[in-house]
Image (tube, rainbow, N blue to C red; front, side, top):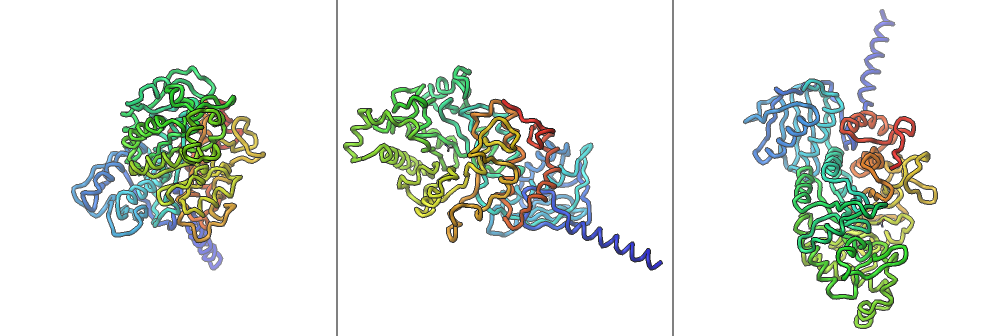
Amino acid sequence: MIRSFFSVMALVCVSLLSQAQQSCPVIPLPSQSTPVKAVFPLNDHTPLAVSEPALLASANMLQQQLLQYAGIRLVIAPKAPGYGILLKKVKGDNPAAYSLEMTGTQVTISASGDEGIFYGMMSLMQLVRTAKPKAAAAQVPCWNIADKPLFGWRGFMLDESRQFFGKAVVKKLLDEMASYKLNRFHWHLTDEPGWRLEIKQYPRLSLVGGIGVHGDSTAPAQYYTQDEIKEIVAYAKERHITVIPEIDMPGHATAANKAYPQFSGGGSAKYPEFTFNPGKEETYQYLTNILREVNVLFPSQMIHIGGDEVSFGSEKWKTDPAVQQLMQTKGLNSLLEVEHYFIKRMADTLLKLNSKVLGWDEVTAAQLPAKETIVFWWRHDKADQLKGALDKGYNVVLCPRLPYYFDFVQDSSNTVGRRWAGGFNPLKRVYDFSLATLPVPVGNRAAQIEGIQANLWTETVRTTERMYYMTFPRLLALAEAAWTAPEQRDFAQFEQRLKQHLPLLKQQGIYYMESPKSTPEPIR
Ligand code: ACM
């Protein structure tokens, strides 16, 4: 009798302990999460209510998500019936913070506005989807969650100049970004192989500049019309994702120069027609006209003007009469000074458009207005670029090649894709990144760090299948590194939670890297 009493008690203790240790299946891991011993039955008859009419658009987004991912069709109740799902506005000073409270009869998502409510809904959707809904119903394990992000900038960059994936694929990426609470989509739309957005004043940019992809300069023109851009920007906005266009200049301008050669500053043997001509006054007017349209299409009030790797193709500037004239009149002593002059002038254009100036870390030396500039630190081997950007007071997005270039391979067995001195970017490296791993102590300048971002360049990515493979599941590790405080992160536990998410990716037709055997690398 006594023995059986003790064994029952031991069992109870073990099960309570395992519940306490159970980790919340939500990715990124919330700041606080406690399991509740209850299951919430969700089906077509579950009422959905809002605390005020301003939340009706959010409620509709939850309806759409439940229909899309679980086949459940909720009705918005005219007033909160005291059970079901309630979206509730509360006072708070962090717009991204939310709480999700669940019992067996009531789910309440509270936040100070739409953004926090959206993140609460994304957490709920993950609980619903990992509960494997069937026949328009789910038994959702209950959790109490209080949550807020580590960084305000949680970004992903896609290079669609080198390969063009198109609207449906971009929307699918935005869906996944939103699900994992990433909030900045940096869209690399112009570069050497192709110019991918319609500019009404200069139609040849897309009609001629849009011809070709990396590896095939004759591929038919592919680009986004302005209507498509508007559609994608609106789709992202509904998901609390800001779209930042990149119009790379004065280098990486080959596609534009194919369309309008009169503004070319030439290139080099390896990078022909690589630059815009910084010596011609007409170039500034041309680029300003382009940026005016870009500014209308992308209401983020942030335009990325690249500024990277100009020296790859600026050697013709040494003999170009217009550039030489500029150097004389402005007293510029080197091509680097010409580059900085150009960047400063284009930054002035952006400021007149009320747009922030975003650029790769090469722009750090160009003396831009500190408060209006965001520098993207990408050269992981150049710690001084990061230090310089911080010292000059710029805000910084951290996207160092190691670990945040997703064109780098993720497993030693991968055969296509980049490495750096043998180094590459496995899931754990993406996951483990934090300010403490930086080569420069950030100290009391942490407020200048906007956040982190992964960049997928597509020279080695010819197909959508390979694009997904390079992106997933690393995107989920990035999301957790961007959202969850480093002291709460644990890679082994993340890998366990990830197992519940891989089937969700598969359901969406996304091919991901799991292991070299089970998910072979697509080589194109
Ligand atoms: C870059 O990788 N050129 C920013």
